[in-house]
Image (cartoon, rainbow, N blue to C red; front, side, top):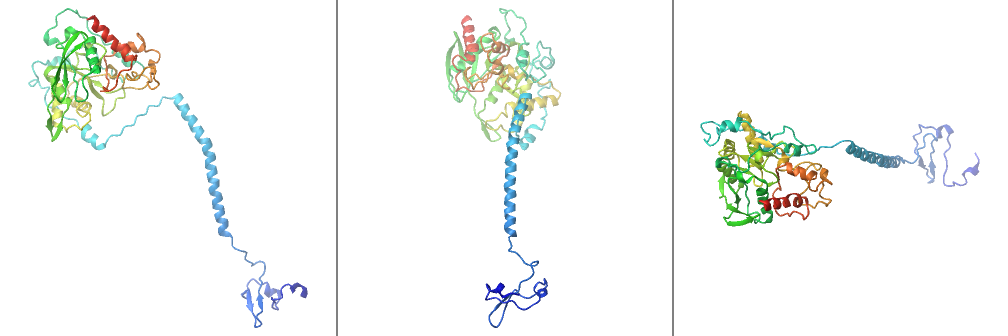
Length: 447
């Protein structure tokens, strides 16, 4: 071996060994050895056993990061196509189909306690207990001229309004005398602890005198409920109506103090027999051969199907006797609830059919509360101007003038329930003013 190959490594010396020994993969000699002359010896193994610097962990981390970025890019790319496609499919679905979605959550404890049990009747329909002034046979099974229950939900178009238009009064002679016991007492109330009696309340009275057949009225009085007794006399369209303000004492039931108009109202109905009224648009006479409450809305809510905004019961009606029994034996009403309203009527209806008694009638929603339905067929908002974008006119759009589609519908139904929105004013020139309020003034002027 030539010396020139080792001139650049003067400090290293290789031991004399055969190539077989130097290249043996089984050699266990250390890679460095020291001689007495402090000379370093390097034991080089064959190229088959040379170990390169370890970079495995770094390569693995780099590979994981690359895969992570690749997944993110794939997800972003996928979303670029999926989101627009989903949006287009959703819009296409709305174009081709009508979605009907309603969610309601009820406490299982409440439904098991208040809804599921069917209460037994207390015996108010027993002939021995029925007041002689109430004809039980006629009240339950007597013939009727009109049918006020449609048997369907009446949600489509103006079906409900058209059904109301099929109910007509029997022909009558306007000047014929009406016996006192055949006259109907109309009853409403006003709570002066909510707001003072003002112009908005006067329109309710005007609607009453402008739409009802006056010779059939038993009394022209409005019973007003409030915490303090007052006396008042007002002029109503050229007629003086005595406003009788009554108040209900606080009562205790199960240790809970109530100041509820429900107790007082039902008491008036039992003692006198009368009709509960909202803002009226038509004579109620063809309905009064029945005893009834009203459907809550067109959706037929399973636990709140009935409403008492427009209701009618005869004097000493056993229906109200059973209602009072439920009020006396059931839990006290929750504050701000309809427990002595909608829930009470539901319990009573179920108890009647379970006891084999024909139940009271249920008027379709639009007869007095046509606002309680879908956007496309309910009445426009009475407190929003007609030209306001927030007032969705639905099928009434472009047909809200006199003798138009809306005017014809109002002449078929019997009232408009305003849901105690007494703080709101009717907009000037709105459909309520044009089609209702002005007609009230014109009719009262002609009386």
